[in-house]
Length: 372
Length: 72
Image (cartoon, rainbow over all chains, first blue to last red; front, side):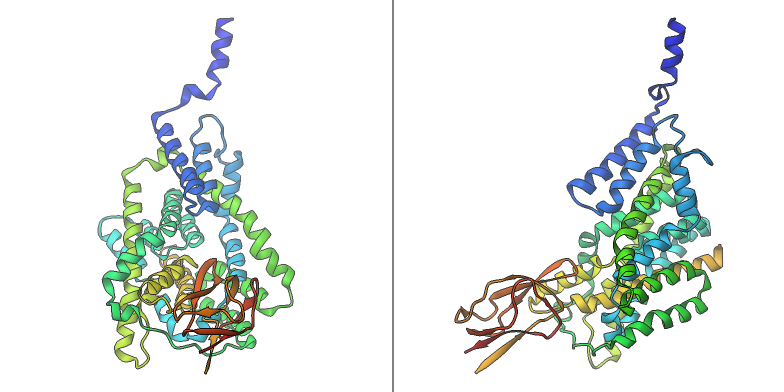
């Protein structure tokens, strides 16, 4: 009788808890707290935090290959590259390329802000990380969650959870991380530069843009095809104005559904054994480094362009070249309006901001081509 | 002399504290436009009285749309 009770007791999870698991509960609970109380990227950090809790319960088999529920979400959603491209379909349907087309010169800022991705890649590989891991850490600097997850799943799946959490945390911290860098690198005169109005963009241009961009980018970097193709299809839905139902579905129902199936398994990859390693500290360190360098190079590139331009660019716009849409653009607007309350930089900042998304996807495509 | 108040950016007017005949000071906040889920205040370009109002709360405006006219 006592033996039976003991046997029953031993099938309960309590017996198999480790200190590492408890520590992971704390991390999962912190993310859930930040999501609810501070509203830091709640759409992602809430399911990720819960996924971490689930992944650190013994005997559940949730992440058991071929069997577990969360393993299936992870395998068929992320490893099969279904979910990040579907997220991009929704983002494309939400994105207005108008501000970019109105001032095409700002596209360079979106490219300049990818420098942090590459510099971090070189810095991390110089410190002895293998090239695939270095690339995965670098891409965090692009501040683009789905792209980070997409690349990590292909190059360094063991780092996927921590890289995703780093990327989404830093995106939530954009309003804290970016302004000091922006103030440090600009003079107060530069910050008050008002931008001249962009030209009017015709509906035809907006329809042609996703088609032409798809052809050009995929011909240049074929490995970027899954993300770029879906992004531009979503945008074509939006601009064509004849498939409003599809546009609506892509940016609402579909995006919401896949967001659920993205966050949960990403969190579930973070079990104590995989996560509690010194390497994780490096991921967060290099991610932050990449992010700051990207912000800085965007600003510096704008200042460099001003040396050659009659019509000056407000260098704050360079900070919007990281692809945290639209947080980085909002931060640019807020910092600008602190120095001149009638300076409306928001829509100008959306140009480099959406260019930054494309830039980060291209960077991921280049890494995949070279290292995949 | 009258001066036009134009929308500095596209968005939705979520707050407006204007009526015809009301006196406003230069740089006074007169309405708030929401764009990209951010509230952006719009300020009076000069002091004067409101002569005409072209929009109402809840309207979607494009950049450079005429919002109101101020008369010195």
